[in-house]
Length: 194
Ligand SMILES: Cc1cc2nc3c(=O)[nH]c(=O)nc-3n(C[C@H](O)[C@H](O)[C@H](O)COP(=O)(O)O)c2cc1C
Image 1: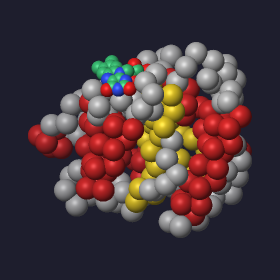
Image 2: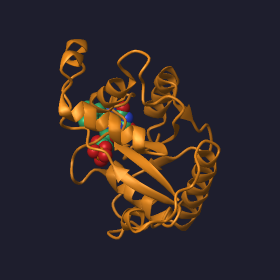
Image 3: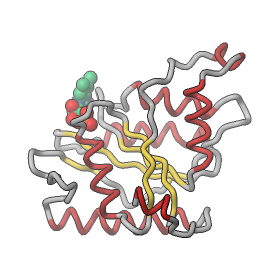
Image 4: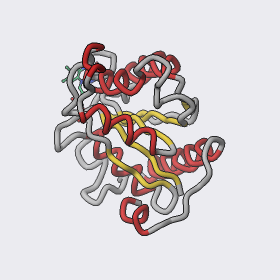
């Protein structure tokens, strides 16, 4: 089992991206333990704040550092990622030379009501992340068009074909993480989240 830090680029409670993350978590039960990382209480990036770093920034860096892998689940805002997610990527990449992203296996997913399924946002994210030193999985990709009922209340993906594809995606992500990290024992603590 691997511990995955999950960053969702939308803070609203009814977020379709949070729902997608929960659906992936369900498909990954017993393989990946998701830890949802809070990003809505971070200050905007300010280099001067490193003189006395905010507790939220220290906490964010620690949670990323402790994870075996990272999953970004992003909405698409004007053909890019939301600013809140970019801010949460920038903080852990600093101070210079002390990025906690370095060498961390990662993957991307995203949901939108639009037919593109966040393809443009994910393409932007793919151009940003290599700068942080993160080890990003290339394929398979997840482009999810969110519709009423496409994810059920218990986080089951309604469409069988999509469910199968996302299940394969979970396995491939797990394999990807295995190239970088040793699996953890499925302790009670991890089982709680998986
Ligand atoms: C400022 C803004 C810009 C948006 N731009 C796009 C866009 O470029 N492409 C797209 O597919 N959806 C776009 N949307 C729609 C979002 O993808 C949609 O609201 C999505 O459900 C937000 O994610 P969430 O449900 O996780 O909050 C935009 C929404 C907002 C608020």
